[in-house]
Image 1: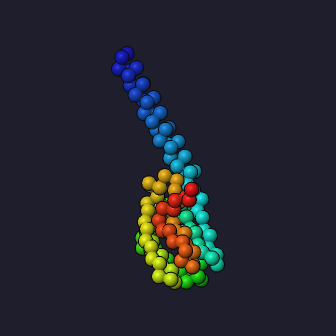
Image 2: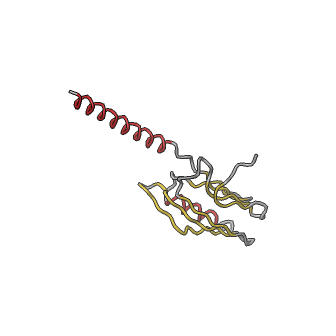
Image 3: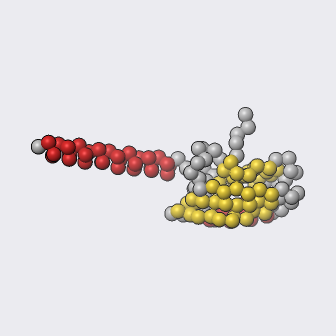
Length: 132
């Protein structure tokens, strides 16, 4: 009798752990931040996220070329169609160069990407911190 009670409690505990892991996974999947792609005649700001597809990366590259900005994706990996790893280098017409990479694990909600103005007054690559 004692063994059966212990075995039942163990099964319940394992089931609770499974449910907790499932809920955590669903929460993380639904919690992907939205990408930001803002490329205009004054500058560009892009926040890469796991929701991005290869087509998004191609579109960003093409749009930046129209303003003389070159972005090269040094390494990119996708998991189920979603971006899971990214390494890139960006070069502007006025000689600014930056490089960054991420696997989207340790960003703690902070945007990852780049922010630049074509006149050279702003150039941020990697984790983009909010101005206070």
